Length: 425
Figure 1 (cartoon, rainbow, N blue to C red):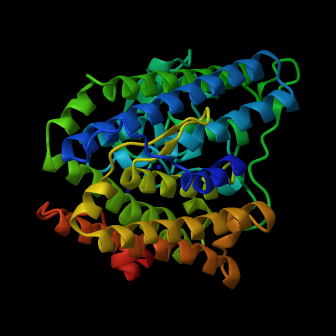
Figure 2 (figure 1 turned 30 degrees about the vertical axis):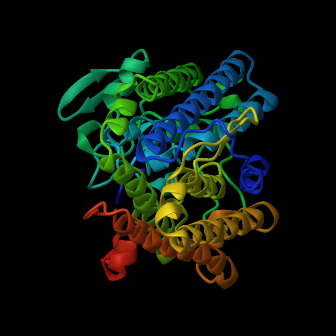
Figure 3 (figure 1 turned 180 degrees about the vertical axis):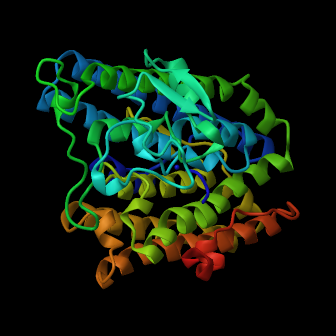
């Protein structure tokens, strides 16, 4: 499987996108201007991701200092808010090797949560594929990795970094959004029934501790949160005007345009439509949803789709409400083939309409993991329509690549779409 990546706020973003106004001061629509603005949007999105991660870190401090229902709810809300801008950055992953190499630190999934903390007996005690399946770092001051004993007496950022993908197993996710998500919500034991994770604040209450090791659980949560902030700072620096990622894009001309379209097409097709959505729908398996502990998957998928559209239109609404516009790929395509540009925007909008319908259902009718459940024809159809939109827009991305004479570009694939029978073997 390929690794990896609020409702009201997320839904409002698409509605707001039609209101952008292009200012006269914008640069002429050249490839160089488009790439410069593409980098500027990346910098803004990672800055917003950092700002919201810092707010999450403060909410986690409050939870640890004064565990209560209120501080746990506030930390969960901060986590959900932090996902909005971050998911809109995922379109930068494909086509930009620097981002792809870094991304696993912050958004790797799925994870074997038994590596981190206690789990329900239904989880099982061992896995033939992962010796650390139930290592439970929080409960154990020493962990064996590849025959060597690692001292985890103190759970620090350094400790977590050394255990991330331990044994070269991708499911050993020790850091990032999803490790934090698990520590805030706990396992979702409802299957395709109603309900998300139900971890109690008392898992952090040293005076009335539930499930043991409340002090070490707090250490882990804080270390993971601090790492997330640190890792996002690295990406903000990389996309600054003189940052490495920005220089790579701006110096590459046509290759820079290829990076934009590779990100759009690969995230649309192989990653989002395939690995994150179609796979779970084929298997009817709630374990195959992206934000599986919090039931926030619908919002993550929606924000991925918003990010794909943003890469094409050059539009982005920042978390403070500021609207950014600038020279766009859309303008380049329109200058060459107005009909193709209209087709691309129409398909991007159709996908967002389907994603918004899915998000609306998730908030009013049933959660995403219920939608993909076996026998839920109506819910399955809602998810499938969003998948169909993603697949359809990826075909037009390929036409745009050809129109701009960018040569052969390979987009990410997925067995879920290209060879479904292999999924069941």
